[in-house]
Structures are given as structure tokens and as C-alpha cells.
Image: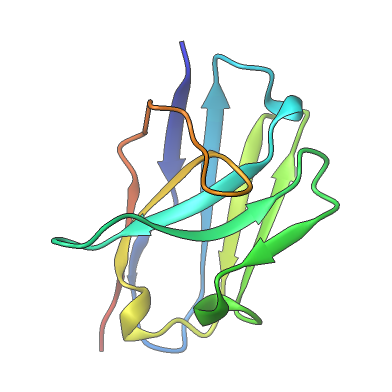
Length: 118
């Protein structure tokens, strides 16, 4: 069964950094592009970053370009999101799933909460 387990979130001051991790299970990880998404209460889930199946290609939503870096480890079936220069507006519940153009599996993990606050 497809499963995602996100971790690494927390409370951080503006300008701080966090590294999110996601463990993926139940599918051939190296066959899929992977993405990070985020959601705040009352809003639609937003795509944030994607990496191709081999990790050679990446792309980001404009609001995080130059601050966030997505990476993956196809041996460990893990995907990461390194976040620097965090802003108040980055506060959200962050999820990982497959996808390059917004496609995703129906199964979602519990997410990991990132709160940027002074």
C-alpha cells in the first residue's frame, strides 16, 4: 500500500532553516517524480517543489525559488526539502507525494507542520 511519512517540521523564527524528510513506501520509488506540497487551513493544497525520478531535474513554485531545495535518495526511498530564509508565509502543513505536474497518489501522509513565528 502506498504510504508517505513526513517529518522534520517545527517552530522556527523568520530567517531560520528546517529540513523536511519524507519516507515513501508501497511503490517503485525510482520510477516516479516526487513533489512537496503544503496546505494552510481553509486553503487548497499548494504544490511547492518537484524532483524528477533520478533527481537530476527540479522545479519550484516562484515563492520559494532560491530558498528551498528538493532532493531525493533512491536507495533509501526518501525525499527531502531543505528550507532556508523561512518567512511567515511559509507556515503550513507540508506533505510529500509523487508528481511533476500536480498528479499524485490518492494516499496522503499526515504531513509535518512548519510554523514560522517570532
